[in-house]
Amino acid sequence: MANTTISITQETKKALLDLGTKGETYDSIIRKLIKRYAWKKMDEKWNKILANDEFIPLDEL
Image (cartoon, rainbow, N blue to C red):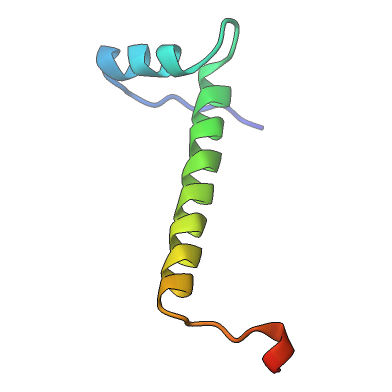
């Protein structure tokens, strides 16, 4: 996979380092954050569906 350069502030760089573990790359840290964000969004969507009863249980089909 080809690499690219992104511009971030020193503050953001430090925050990424704080979130990662020793030896972890910025790419790995960012990928981990993206994955967590995607799971969080999906969880929020399911919670909204459950709260609004926007589903049909399988046994009612």
